[in-house]
Amino acid sequence: MAAKTLTIDGKQITAEEGETVLQAASEAKINIPTLCHLDGVYDVGACRLCLIEVAGVPKLLPACTTKVAEGMEIKTDSERLRKYRRMTLELLFAERNHVCAVCVSNGHCELQTLGYSLGVDHVRSDYLFPKWSVDTTHSLYGMDHNRCVLCSRCVRVCWHIEGAGTKNIAGRGTKSNIITDLNMPWGDSDSCTKCGKCVQACPTGALFHKGSTVGEMERDRSRLEFLVTAREKKQWIAAD
Amino acid sequence: MDLAGLVDVVYSPVVDVKEYPENVDVCLIEGAVCNEDNLELLHKIRQRTKVLIAFGDCAVTANVPAMRNQLGLGNEESVLQRAYVENAQFNQRVPSAGDGIVPTLLKRVMPVHEAVHVEHFLPGCPPSAANIKALVTQLLAGGPKLEGKQIKFG
Ligand code: SF4
Ligand code: SF4
Ligand code: FES
Image 1 (cartoon, rainbow over the protein chains, first blue to last red):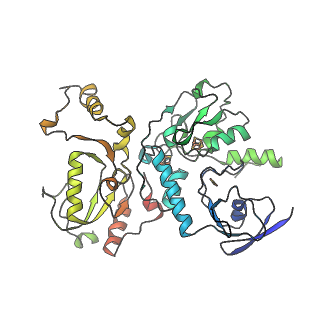
Image 2 (tube, rainbow over the protein chains, first blue to last red; image 1 turned 60 degrees about the horizontal axis):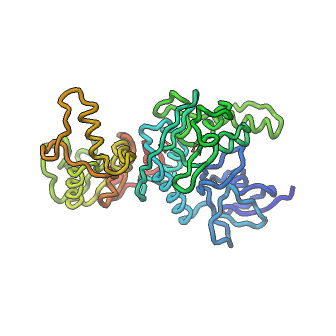
Image 3 (tube, rainbow over the protein chains, first blue to last red; image 1 turned 90 degrees about the horizontal axis):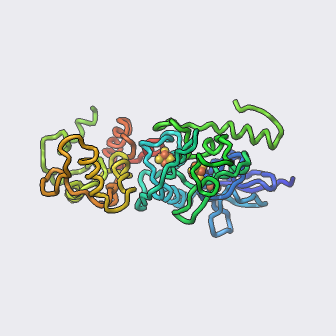
């Protein structure tokens, strides 16, 4: 495959054709904040936290779905990017009910970590305080819509890695939500194989093992990586 | 303790003064704005204070007290009913506003910065002693610059 040369934050790098800017940056040890991206599953550009500036392009582009091109000049950090990333995070906090103090993911949550890393010490928009339910009908797992950021990681692992196609997104705007099959209680689903990949993939406290209490929900992403490596490279190597 | 010599604590739940004084330099405010008493005191504090700091998750995000907002507007009656009648073992009665016992609840619980201008924020549930010390030290040195885990919610 042809190699492309480009500049990220002033650093000259080479990347393979077809790679995303996010992949190229991470190989060059340049960190771009992400939320909906999950190693091993295809990217959809849902969260817009990985936005970057590309010279000559007036709008901001998501690094996870933008392919590298010859001579690209990219900035991953600027006043403008920080402003938008912070605003995006604040809107995510305002849109659902994130009561970290009583959340199963407190201390292990990607939204929470992004918040404090990117300087969100308060949310400037009014909180919506919507009414959402918690689905605890499944024998092993629960889904708390109050904590969901609609990153769709659960949907993608369910379809792409497990091949069950149980999880889906329904509705529009602030009414969008994760559903099971044709919008039924999770416990009634015939398609769910109870594999728990969605629970491992979720960045927040939205999907959890039943019985976890405040701060107890830690995830083990190595199980997902193991499966993806096994499938794509035919190598069965357990992560250390 | 080194800080104790540098500040005068003029008002707090553990100080005898009942009325919030004039010309206060800094006030750390904890708790969400839930009822009319909270709101009235908050406006008074804002008027008489140079620098306000929202202190802790309830002040910064409205946190657990704001969970009643999820019931929709107009839940003032039903939460009192739940607390004083359905869950009460004795003397089941909703206190009336005239009793002066329970201040009238606001329609919507708010974080402090939704009601008045706030200069700085210290999230945390509760904020750790180290973060409080860092905040006050930085404040005495010109202005707070908390970052990273120091501003973690929860
Ligand atoms: S999902 Fe994350 S940000 Fe939301 S309440 Fe839980 S810990 Fe906080
Ligand atoms: S349940 Fe979790 S993984 Fe699924 S969309 Fe919501 S936040 Fe993302
Ligand atoms: S990580 Fe790129 S849009 Fe979410």
